[in-house]
Length: 350
Ligand SMILES: [Zn+2]
Image (cartoon, rainbow, N blue to C red; front, side, top):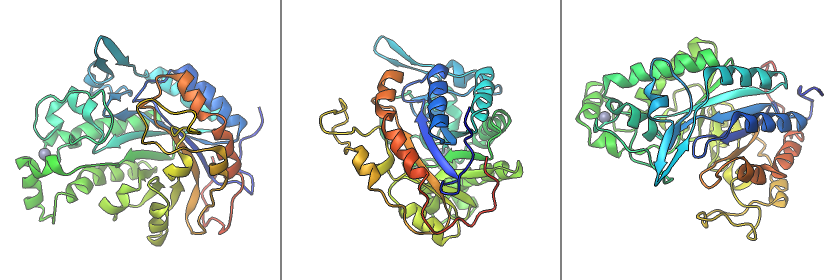
């Protein structure tokens, strides 16, 4: 097997994210992708494991996450699945043998409808939430005033830290609405008890202890670029997806970042107008030629580049494969053409 170590013209972070929630992806397909990543000398597999539509990660202290939250019901169909601890440990080793780190993402405090379905006491209304069969941004979020929330998150992230040796843990943080917090007496009490200026402070009230937990294990926290606005005090690596603004602001704050601006790096976007995705007319196209034109901004702190594949409209491996290739090869080429300024990092690669 050829080495996947860093070369002098390569970015330290050469990543690919696979959403295994909106539609479940089997381990055999993930191994296929890891093989392809190794061939292209990509070295970070970002595994999106939880979202509104499902929960894929076993947590021993929270068995209902698998029993109730890993499957959604659409008409007569049961859609979903989960990974076992054994499969996860095996996959981590499989990736390691190819010089790839598996970076798990547990998305909080929004995108949690499936978890709230399993454990309603984590929600503001306190009653059962349906697992949606549609996509978008939902109002339901973790309740900052429920005593259960912190205990639940501790159970989840202790397991994540045990299962994944990754130096980085991704905690999501994207697309969080305040509406539930505004109308929840328990959350309002947290705001008044802590003299918080607004509901937005509940975001960091929930996430900061988890950042501390992850750091106490010697790991680093990654979050989507919304965390810059809502958790600015935290020492985190920013994944800049809504454009480059997240990376630019992160650089100003002395934080590191990973670039995955959606217009250039989201592989769920169709390659051309001739290859449209049913139900996703809003999506812009992303051709290989457009990806090639991307220029990395000349700012400090950029660890590298990443492509993301969200699977709302992709039913399984066949459809996913069609989106991933050949554009993953274009991403890899970009990842091996590092531009100045040089990284100010002494972090060991891999
Ligand atoms: Zn609440």
